[in-house]
Length: 154
Image (cartoon, rainbow, N blue to C red; front, side, top):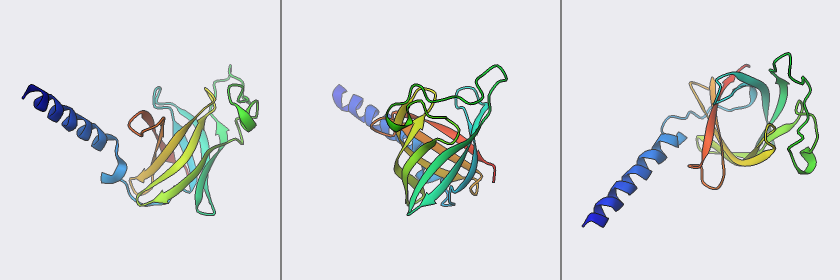
């Protein structure tokens, strides 16, 4: 009896948490193509401008500008990246690749964090008539990740 109660409570908690991180209930289907101001989900500060384009049905994002403190390197390189991104300039780097339109979300791609050099699975969705873009990077399941909200510049 106690096991059934615990199992039901756990199932309910997972379902509730899944709904909280799922975009399907509030997303709109406005294209993410354009220029976006990225906002750091930990500090709330603007980090960069990323241009999202669509090429052959796949969405990709490239860093166009960084917002850095005067004391920071204004033209950093991705020294923690691996492969073809290793030691490449962060400005001009394609950090999002392979996202495809899937209903109200864009999924199936990857995103690289130039700060730590790691690449994550990625999905994104627009809200507020395309004024905001939710970008979720995760490992394995979307439940295990973080979401940043980017603001449309143009």
